[in-house]
Image: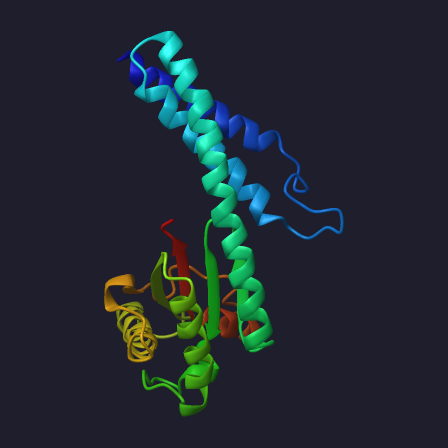
Length: 221
């Protein structure tokens, strides 16, 4: 019971702290987001939480929180730094063909479905295989990660059909990554249909943005 209360206390405190931080907390002087710092902060928070709940006495919990924060910050900074390097390399190699987002704990490579597939098709356009080969090479250069391939659609058509189509398209992308050498044990696929739009489905431009396949890179070390 006491340990459960401690978990709740630390979690609440972490949420309160994050709410007090300005959007520039993890930004460099030039305004760009510093994901190394963000990774260190996230790692420190998680490390402190683990340290708190692992102690049996008050002194053990305090000592565990400090040690956990230090270890977690170091690990988080390494993850953030590796993601920044991988992001920079992918941006240089892929150019403006794809959207890449670095959230500090993962990379999200978003490929527009309109350039990947014909309408109502899950067969990849031949010209896009070079981009997927680039992503696959990056994944093999940074082997300590899991990869989620997630298909998304707009809200036109039958929802059940859209989920199936988005999953088949995700499978097509994952198959190319596997063919290019990414171990299947690192890959998972999912189809979300129109459940997770990134723009309004009320405009053709928004629907186009919502039709996408995301390759989510999740570091494991």
